[in-house]
Image (cartoon, rainbow, N blue to C red; front, side):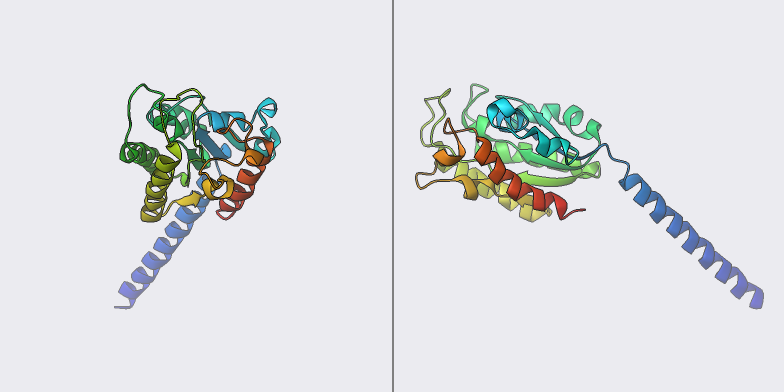
Length: 221
């Protein structure tokens, strides 16, 4: 009986040591990331690092962030680029801002808000499966697309899409950055203070967005 107790004690010690080693190894792997955050999106993300477009490249360089912005791309396009742009870059977190070009029908077809949400959900799930924390973003406000004038009242569609994105974040436990509420004017479009073309943020607009997203990112550290 005494020998059995000694063996049991030794087994418990061995299990405890193995657990401690596994936790230490997991912590080590967690710190082995290339970027703190990868931002993936369309021209709004691309312009964010372009000072000629009102962007703040220092926001990214000083925080070990990477902007992967693709002008004109829809959520479906970004889904195809997600592995190369996000997973392979090995970030701790990903910030996903997509959907406005779907509403503008940049791929030449109507895309429902539910389909846009589903493509965003796919990207978020891929990130989660690879150990990357997800931050979903509301689509920024606009009342018109100067390159797609046949689309009327996109501000209403944007609001409805943002409800779906927020519901997805709540359901899956993703963080949510609400840019829309901070940038929107009484007409449902982006305030002229924050945009020079009624669609893309300017320097002041990006400053507002940074003030929203940075605390969300830092809360995970």
